[in-house]
Structure formats: structure tokens, C-alpha cells
Length: 445
Image 1 (tube, helix red, strand yellow):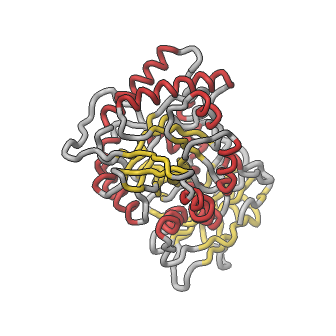
Image 2: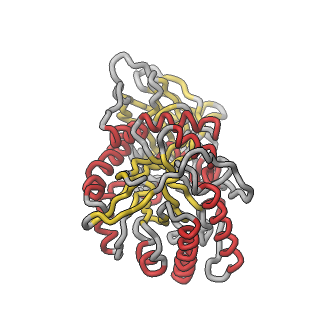
Image 3: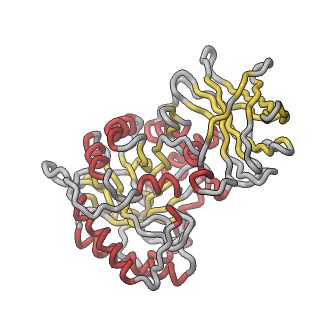
């Protein structure tokens, strides 16, 4: 997921950071175990029960973040790159018994990802060498930190390469980087990360020194992944390095041309089912070494509401799904459940346009709900604006669950959110789409 990754990656530092020296680093290994493999830390079996990590507000919150995540059964964090916050994160993780799959960022091969960067792996020899040296500097800086579990090289670079020649050039370069990283640090495994199984054939042919694969997959396709790895020629163990509900890039469109976001219940169920039923047998068989649910971030934006565990100070259903997946504990009190979000019509009131909205939410008896509405305009001109979510003025109607919501002045269909927050700080959401000129076409309950 591009936007959260960009915030987490930061700018690679070229000056040394202080790393704790009082602790001996943990030694991680992937060992053959029967027909499968086993991840070990200091000789003891270890299964990564993880989340990807952007944080809830920078280094000052890392201690609280790691304490909260540990309390819901998380034992491992994944980052996409290193930067000025990495030392503080590793320290906080170690304090709370967590380990970190440390990302080592490699530039994508075409615009579309973070900051629309693009790198030419075929022709830019100086740029390749600069990336190699910057990567090794990070490895040497952090390799002795006891929170380091493994290194994760790149993220979806093969997916974001313009052609096969670029993919091959990147994969050949990746092998060079893997060998150099392993020479600099023999105590931690090295994996590379890409979408689905797209990287597997290239890794197998051109980057044989990798210890494992990192696979990003979303939705119920997780059940088909083990067979897909086999069909792609995979012969190594793997981690699921990003996982969550079906993503926007593969969701169907509604009548207004906007992607239909899964409901909160579906998002919750996908995470629990994915870990328990799709990956559980693969962990037992020694093929899957762990999972990282996307994403621990407090962002109140389109990506955060679709896939995040938090929204500002509120917990989203994904937070509780992670806890149930890793500990078996269900949310208590039960979460509110959005039942219906629909727009009966649109009317003018002077210069303002208002939607007549019905928003029904089921909640435990006696649990008051704070209801609000917001919008997102996917047709905005900039990446930042396309991801932005803005709160809308609303007024309660006469009938239960009825509202008048003031609509934004945007040129085209937009996404409308109905949001309900309970007294325990849980935030649930429903979505639909609105075209002010023509009314509404509902896209979800």
C-alpha cells in the first residue's frame, strides 16, 4: 500500500545513529524441518504474528504503540525502509519483547508508487551502486540490535517495473545486494517482498541467495496462495508481508464508477479466517513463517479507513480482528455494526446542497453512538487529495437514523462515509457513492 509505506519509509540517513550495545543481538535462522522449514530465534522456534507499522504519531508514541500491540498478541513489526525513526522503533520494540522485520527500501522501476519515483535498473549503474552502499550502511548500523528479526529487501519492485528486461535487471541486482547483506550480517535471514507470486520466478532464477519470500496479498485470495507459490516454481519458505481485506485495486466498481469497499464485518472476517484457516495449515507444514496485517497507523484517510487498525485515537475492526487472530479474544463489548447507509435524495438549500441520508447502526443496548459523516473524492488532482477524507456538516432528522448531510462542491461522484463511534473508542464505517447532479447509487450496506 503506497501511501502508508511512503510515510513509513522516510529518507535514508547517511549518518550513523547510536544503537544499544548492552544487549547481545538475537540470532535468527531459517532451518530445514522435515519437508518444510522453521524460523528460529536464538535456537527457539518463532512464528511471526505481525503487523506492518507506520505508527500512531512518531517516536514519542513508539513505546505506547509497542505496548498496545504486544497486548493484542503481536510479536513482530514490519517496516518498509529505515530512517531517522528506526533506532527509536527498535528500542521500543525490544523493550516490549517485539522483533522487527526491517525493511531496506529499493527504488521502484516506474512511477505509481511512493512519490511517483522511478529508477532504471537496466542502465543506471551508478544509481545501483548508490543503492547498494546505502543499504549496506543501514545493515551495518542496525544489525547488532536485539530487536532485528530479518531484513526485507524492496517492496513490489517487480510489480512496479515497466517490462521484463527491467524485472530481470532488478532481480540480478537484488542477488548482488542479498549477497552483500549476508556478508555484512550472517546472523539474520534476508527476504525480498513483492505482490502475490509475481516475484517468485525471478527470485528463483536470478536471486537464489534469498532465504525466503515476502508475499503481499489481500482478500480471500489468501486461500489460493500456497498453490500459486507452487505453480510459480517456489521452493523456499515465505512470509505474508502484507495482508488485509480486498484492496481497492481489485474491488469491483459501482454504478458511479467508484470501487466498492468491503463492509467492516467482511474486513474483520478476512483477517481472522486468513490466519486461522488459510495460513494455519501452512504454518504447521513449515511453509509459511508468519503474517503481517496491514496496517498499524492512525491515519484518518482513504487508505486508513479501508485497511487500517486505527483511525486517529479510535480502534477500527481490523484492530480487534488482529487480536482475535493472534489470541482468540473477541471484542468486548461487541462492536457496533453498520446495517445500512443510503441516500434518499439530494436537495438545494440556497447555495448549499444537502443529502437526505439514512444511516442505521446496530449496537449493544444502552451504548450511545457518536455519528458523523465524511467524504473522499477519488477524482482529485493530487495523490494527497485523492486519499484525503474530510468531515461533513450534518444535522439529525426527525425519524430515527435519518440525517441531512451537507455535500461538498466537487465535480463528479464521491465516496460518502457514515461513521459511528461508541463509548469504548471503537469506530465503524459504512460507505456509499454520491453524484450530486443525479442523486445516488448505493455501493454497500
